[in-house]
Image (cartoon, rainbow, N blue to C red; front, side):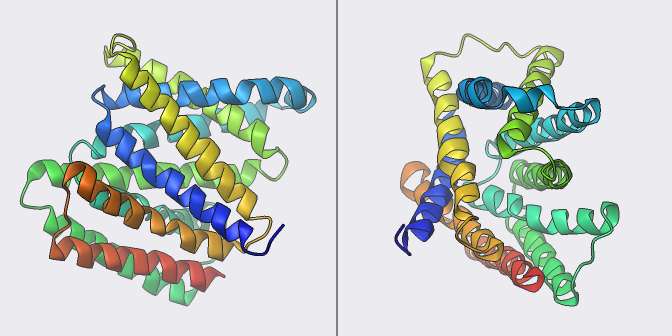
Length: 286
């Protein structure tokens, strides 16, 4: 493999994930339905590979693993539900930037629950990111809906950080494919329960919404996170984490011609602070 290929593949992965926020914004179905379609397609796409190549590992899965993967799936469902909903209330730029604070919440959770240690420089990075979040909230404070969307995006970051921490524990002894399949299946089941509990019909929205769900599954899973996992074999985790910070930039730039969303000055300033804090923490931990 050529030396530059992993970096090119990594950037394709970032672009794939960046498209997901645009697809969610284009959807007209309720956020829970969009998330349900996305996970439904993801599980369906993973199922043949799991049945053909990982049946033996599936049979060895213990009850504790099923419980933790189930909890991980619930958290991931809450992440999708809150993040997708945030994109209906606030701008693509604010939502994607605030969701990127996942790294910060993961670090805090790692220190609290897994006895990890936050570097001194990491504390400064966390403070910088939260200052940027406050600036974004100030920029969107003119409309209650936008501020509500910002809070949903932050909640989505917290949920996905907890999902990441459970994944760290489970990936010690489960393959990526089996862990993600079990987690995504639990996530899909949780979303279906939420659809039922909120009296949200799952069907009747037209083929456009079904195809958006397929696009999310392919762009975010196959052409997004899977390419991140591939890149980790050739590139350092800090490099991959830093590259992911391009997602809000790509998404915001694509949102200008597609939805006419031009970030304001304070919004740009807050976004820069958040991304700088996340990048600084990545470097501090490296």
